Length: 423
Image (cartoon, rainbow, N blue to C red; front, side, top):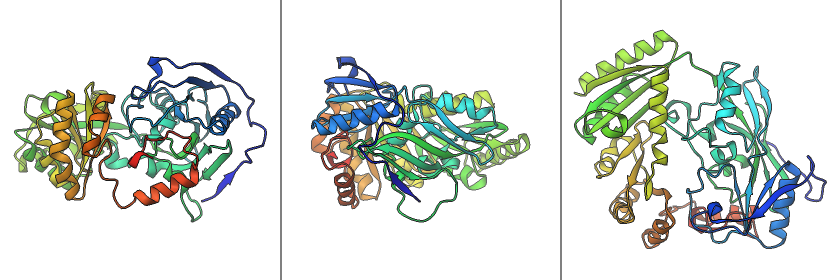
């Protein structure tokens, strides 16, 4: 891996200038209204904005379209909201090499449309792709049901460019799938919520777009039956995606449902569905329906979009797949990635959120898992401080994360308070 750093005093690479206005309540992040909003029209303008804010001792938070700003802790302070949606070009699509380099403000829907013309895709399916930018995808480490077979951002990210607090443009990684050994600094930015640098460009490896997509829906009487059925399907055939959901969320007339998705050519999908049905029979789950192509994709998108359910809070629990029933037995609408042990639960009000965190966090952490309040209203975030806050126990890596923050952003200019342990 290579890392390069443009001198902070060098002239901007692409012109200068930003649209600027005073912050309003509509711009608030967890109730904190920025003093001003900057919308740079070029990379050079973005570098100037970051440098000027840091030099003035101001706190800056980068955003794309703002769809996922409910993730993370309440900002310690917020002077400048930097909107990067105008930096939205697809800079290079090397179809033969199956890589793409794209600016941070490009939406995933726009990127997907371009890649589809070459029969390729970036197989990451977070909620609201029309409103999710590449920068937000990386900063919040977003994913969806496809993570079961395609992995997450870390698995597909090849290189990154970001702006340091002094305005320097730093590049890590590369534009080829094979890279030299070394510290993989771009991966440190994945999920860091912009606390280590302002992401402006990313390079991903791509995959061929599957010819077909199909799904089988299973109806289950309780959470334990759903987990057993999902694991039986996982062991019988490799699914493209495998979700457990409340019946009302999946559209099944049963307490729980398992949605098994498959990718490939037509014969592969049909064979996989047959194996899934056989596994369901063995696990005593009832087949509730089968979907082809667009309906299957719509179901996957609906289950992935559950993370944006309108609620006081959405909790994300990480545990072993075979222990998911302990989480899903909670009396709350839920969806889980059955192959990975990641579940999301909706809390409809402040009291419900507090009760769920109080009941679930300690047992999950004792078992080696984690319970994060992925999204919540500001009053819920403040109320949970005595229960470990949004993030809970940061684990043994907390000191390393503090050292990274001190090295990348010693003046705490970038999104202070948003990440784990109030980083």
